[in-house]
Image (cartoon, rainbow, N blue to C red; front, side):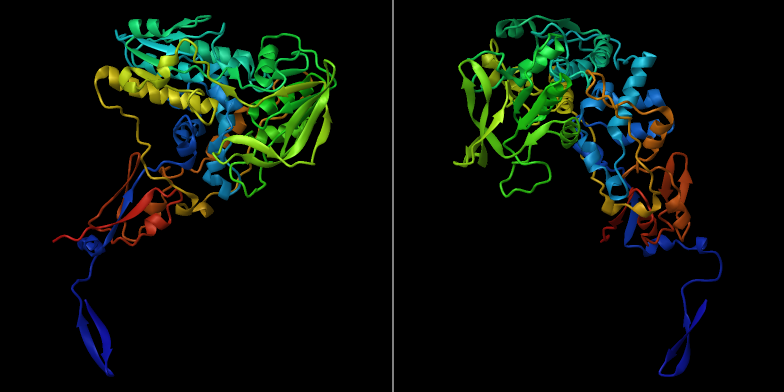
Length: 551
């Protein structure tokens, strides 16, 4: 083929190195310096999930109405979908790339939907191994961490023995989470499905170190934090001062709790908000005294935003709970044995120089808050009685730790995740292998690597909120209905994971993208490395990589 050019006004003929005919006759891929490569990436929702669920995978199955397959994929990591779908504070949704298009996928509602369906249909967990292993494993604590660890071990042939000092399994989920957030029947059914795998459960049992060391090859300690931190006035009558944990335990045991007209709740965490919302349901006024800043206020002192979930705070305010921020209790005000209220003062600094929570007050800012009962929800601690020497143990000693006793987050989903991690590490140790966790080292995909303009904007589906929310302890939020669940699952952007949209195939100018069953492949004989396929990939599944120069 000849071309025409100009040189100082004189026409010249330029001979090119190709002949007429189809471009398929030439391996144009020899020209490229970059090449497209399909890479699965780890969506931001899963990267921040404390339980490390493969959220994109189970949502994709749910979008095709493969409900049981979606539930099985979800429960590979989290055997409590109906529970966590109700109480988890869903950091996954804050990280969801769809926030940059319209609003996050309602992941926790989908999790609850699958969990509730599994309960209604009676789906059972399946073991990966038929043969029961002989090595003996003890788990101390039947909360979400202990049960998660036992679940993972049992599916792999190791039937642990679970010890718990309480009379029912579930830990704080059973003893302290109010029914309006988590009905006990839902939790009980998910625990029953876990126990059906065959592990032994010994309740009302406080085990000791000697028994654990003598009878078991490995020990997982998930003892939780069931002991309230010390609070002022505890030596007085429990009718006027009590801990938040004690208050919630009494409610969950079904004990009658008589309240005065006005109750002050001290604390800024989720327990304080749970207590205040329960107080409102019992007909009393609730005032939360919080030393931290409200959500969204960017105070110059780091780490001072209240730790409670913003969603819970919003719901508490809608139910009539009054919150007073950046204040603390200076003293309890009594008239004889009768509590009339608390004296509060504005907080100057929330933490001391060592970073410990230790509020310092502004003198002269004192105020009086009327209250006939003060409930201190200022945190809990682990009770190591009988297990003191284990505090300094390590995995090399055959001892693993998990749950709230060793976690800073104090979230149920984090406890579930710690149970999985401990189980995987324990299995490797028992088998004499190196621990293998999974492919969480995949690259993160952000909205900047995606083409969000390809996705249509779609409204987010929510469960209905009861108008009678203070009428007893019935659930406040209902679950999704079938059509809404399918719609919500399909809102997932499939970040970093191919969903076979055909864009790369349609836009390739050299027909170098080849469709095949389950995806695509690149014919590098003809790919010139133009990068159009990567530019037009909605979910950011394609990377352009440099081709190393050959010597």
